[in-house]
Length: 262
Image (cartoon, rainbow, N blue to C red; front, side):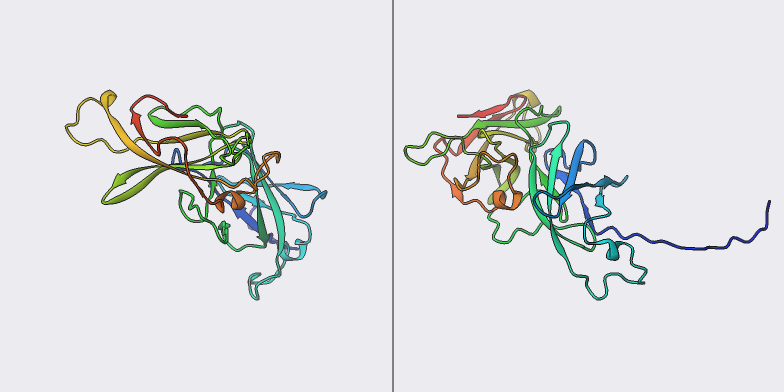
């Protein structure tokens, strides 16, 4: 049957109140596969799972207390700005490539969420409006990537415990300053697996397998972070204070070999 008029009885629009992109600095790409991202309004309440779009955005629908906003028929649901409520977001990688973590996000949030950690001492690598992912100890470095592994301990006197959730940065001298190559977070046992691209190779510098670079290391750590937690709050991780490394803060990175710091 052709030429028939279609009568629209009802039109329903749904506005997603919260959306995230997750960034793997090691491979410089958005990660959309294998992640389970959930939101919880309060301890003990049900978890709401996010759905991922083809563009790699994890978005939520049907968050508690936001039904009126999500189903609003207003032409512009953001005018005036709607009242927000906090949600604890939990990120777990089902493929175990990345360490799990949590953070708090207020919803509704217009556009892709931007992680704003007031008082942060560490700047995560990656583009704006992405949430950083940190490699798990068991992750294998992709072909052609460098890897640094370390086992970190709490430096407090008379203390023998892992430096859980400590952060390590590897950098190289560049243009009179330094360029960060990678940033890694330790797990609850203090194990760090930092995967990053190799530095640039100078022209006419010989075979790639013979290349080596002197890199610098620095760390941040706070004993106040709970090593017994299943996952840390990523903002608390990024607020840790600088920590002195007992090992030499410089090391030689050789192409094709893992850099092990002890």
